[in-house]
Amino acid sequence: MSQCWPLLLTEETLPAGEERACSCPGDSWQFCLNAEGVVYWLGRPESRELKIGELLVCGPGVHGELRASRVGDAKLRRFCFNPASLIGVFSLTERVDLSRVSEGGIEVFPADHRASQLVAGAALPESEEQQLPSRADLLHAALLALAGHLPHRNGVTRPATNSDQRLHQLLSRTPDGELLSRGAGEIAELCGCSVRHLNRLIRAELDCNLRSIQEEARLRRARELIEQTGARVSDIAREVGYGHVGQFNAAFKKLFGLTPSQCREACFRIVTSASSKRHGPAAK
Image (cartoon, rainbow, N blue to C red; front, side, top):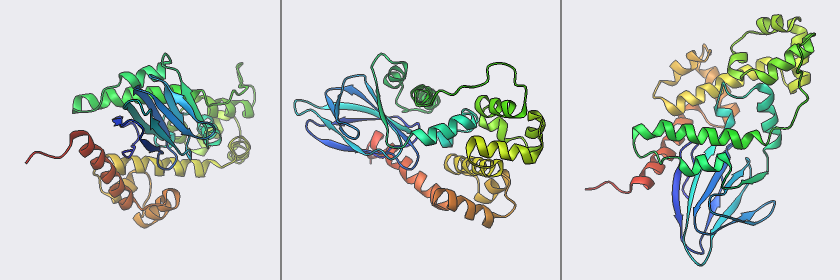
């Protein structure tokens, strides 16, 4: 099966009786819709038939195979999505919850589910005009599917009366990009407590400190710029708040396992491969 890239829809014909591995890199979730024919999912927690229009969603670390029936070819639509690459949509609480429940799980959404319908109707990005609408449909489908994986929390529905409740509301309701753009002092003021007490509350709520959360968000923003723009690494490092490129490179490699240059090269190879498989060899 061709390589899968976040929010890049691909369509593939699976010949009768053949199998293809189904996996995504890193922390990405896998989305695969049976557009035509009879397809079987072979993997954990159990094997099953994937009916026409059904959407298979696999969490990070899930590996399995998709097999077409021996009686005929099948057509698959698939893409990947990494929640960590998207800043400004999930709250910090939702992000932590997703990281805890994603490992090793799968779910199948019926053909009449809105997420399945969005993937079935999304346009293959054959032109510049189609790319943004296609990504928007896939993002909408991914968010609808992942919402079902978030555990129910007993949040504060009445006005918060103490710093613990105010912080809980901020962490669970505020998009992370908005919250992480504020300094510790400003967040502490919003919660009505000291910075020291704020850090204790955050550690108790999310099992980490605000500084590490903010640094990770800066690096994920940097990765997005590296993969999606041609800006120089030194300029990106300064844009996300690093004064020294060497320090930025070390922090980037520690989090992602690749240097910024290696990350850009890997992205270029995958996008080039996906494009060549859609359009075929260039005419001579």
